Image (cartoon, one colour):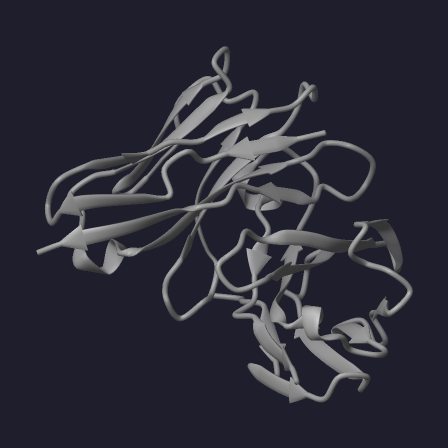
Length: 116
Length: 118
């Protein structure tokens, strides 16, 4: 069974500073995908960034980047130059590779608060 | 930019009533999903749908739940006899394909339907 662990229920960061949100995963699959989603207070799930298990380079997408350490099974999200609008819940998720369903397994999330 | 849409945004129903939640996935996507999120908790997988049939369902997806893709564009989740514990946000998601590329592997979520069972 696949498992995603986010150990930080809440994080605080000052505006314009960088913050790292932790995520570790457990899987026996050789091929998998790792995702981060942002959920603001309005409730929608917004895709942020993706890392494939075979990608050799860490993914980057604007102010978002991943610190992907495959041997440690971790994929931490780094948000640089935090903005007030970054305050939200952040979920790490993993895509299974079995069969034809490719469902996502989510962690419990980290609530990020950006202080002015 | 194409997006997943869901209707209604909010649904209030009485226990025991049937509800149908509707989704329009992104038009060229091939894989479709329903997830739910009970308030304050993590997102949980309900069911996946590919090639006009269910490919996997979770333990939550019991006989009270069903899904349909009736006309090639809509994707619906039906709960036949709602219970109090069905109150949650229900998300529809879709993705294009199975390859390990961000363009085809990413599931895009709709804005959700908040279901309240009284």
